[in-house]
Length: 365
Image (cartoon, rainbow, N blue to C red):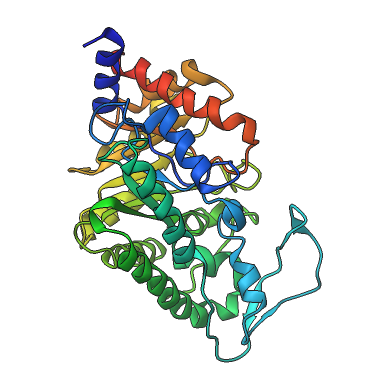
């Protein structure tokens, strides 16, 4: 075995990379090929290559995470916008909330159709040997809390949550029926949950829970319920997130206390093995204090991915953050803070290369 091959073997077994979801490329095949070329191809030996799971990049209408759901809500009887039209995200997505005005029957949400189409390309590329054989196809889904908290006015949230929950579960059932379970990983994206937990940080964050009882307990209960929709044989993971609006969090976490609390709660109550968890790390946090709350989490067999990768400071910055993280988390893979589908397309390939460089450096650090 060559020295280069030996290095690849070490890094893919010890420091895997995780892609949260969004990747800026023109279509799913472009994402899958580029990721395989840079990180997850058959040339990258080890369990699942350097990336155990590859998403389709959330291309097309999904590029701005959940915003495309509002386009469907606009055409749904029983829902109406609140207030006068004004600002639009990237001149496309109306930011006004909705209210429930009657019975709501949601249309196709778009997640299943996209996943089924993308899996056809994934399977073909895997059969061709472009994607490593052990790699799973990753489908990222929002939590109902994310949709309800972001898009419904306070008085409509309790009524709308079960409607969206059931529609999302139906989308998942379609995916499960179409994609072989041994080739599939489901990730639930939890971001608005942290706006609720950080609601004392000011008006930009102040989102009150719409359920009775403790906010954290309600969040954990809902995350655990969603995880229980995933059958054995399909990998399950969670992306814990502080948002990504034009590549910025809605608030910077003071430390990892809320991330740790949610992780502890989910791992303690999960009815399905949690295969992986992703947690963000702000670029300036290379201090042990940020990571300290994570020392209390019993990770068990769950693969932990930390958002240590920032394009602004490259390998050196990631290594500083990794050194601090090791004071609390004994073993982890690497990722960006969030998806990178909203960044410029020309940054995508260098950012994937940066994952590989950081992993190689950590494998010998």
